[in-house]
Image (tube, rainbow, N blue to C red):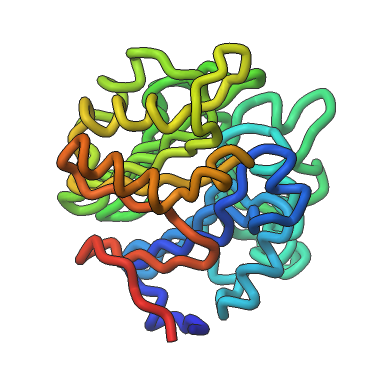
Length: 268
């Protein structure tokens, strides 16, 4: 199913569901990030390797994008950010668009090039607790700094009366629960099947705790590592649904989710 501006409206497209090096860079799954449309306002979150091509194949023109958000500087989340910005701005011919990212994504050894940043209308350096109005009906906030190897933030969209949270890479800690309370849709990066304390990623068991405590209407797991793929994410999602009573889905590459009905759009 190729998208148009009309069919993309109020949808979330999973341009990739790969997490960690073995899956993202072993080409076991795509790693293009999340593409949101809110009443025609387009946001690309974490455009990892291949994001530009994966978007194009789905019919999404990166020039439609108004905002790019990087949760952090690791390449599975940002490898294609410069391609996306170049397309957004028509190679700098049109100064437009907003970038949100942590400070270390643009300093020292920057993952967002100075050249492409110069073509954007605005660059916002994210800090814990920041909140920005993107349109009359859309606000994005960055409620808490995550526990990851580099500066990392999840995000919370407030769109009309709907709360949409994205918990990016992090080690589990209790502060995540209060930070993302109020989410109607909870998207979680679940890289590990079983907990590994030395790795700063969520496991399926920890995701289950977060889902149970945050109480969204629907939860969607993504960003799977090798152990999650081996465990079959859809079976893990079914088990979490049974244990929490909250509908939990396992995203797949190019999955389209309707942000109004909270249903997966069946592709044809």
